[in-house]
Picture 1 (cartoon, rainbow, N blue to C red):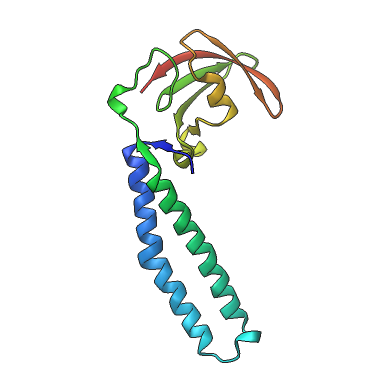
Picture 2 (tube, rainbow, N blue to C red):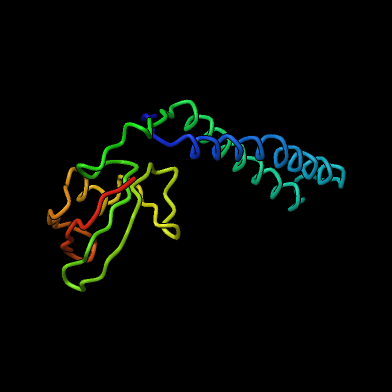
Length: 156
């Protein structure tokens, strides 16, 4: 698995989610399986099948989180500059077709949250902005074609 760069806050949230899955959800699913098993014939027991499937999905999620945490590398947020666009920067861009201003924070995949303006550095827009300076024009290929943005501001 590849190294994932993230903030201390992002890593903390992953660890909290893992604790929730292991200490709350795992015992709950085990209880559901035991309850379904007590109802008799397992070959025709839909509750048992559903609980076992939920257990498999939960264990896969736990395994995925453990791998993500094990391969996480913290970003030294104090070393982040604003000379050019990089991970953890807040970037204000102007869409040159619509003249609309948008602000995004470039974060790791595990911290992406579009509703809160956080986009993953692996997205086409973030990739197209990486390394750009204020005033630079970025032509970015997106699924719907090519979009042109001007970098208006870079902050942390």
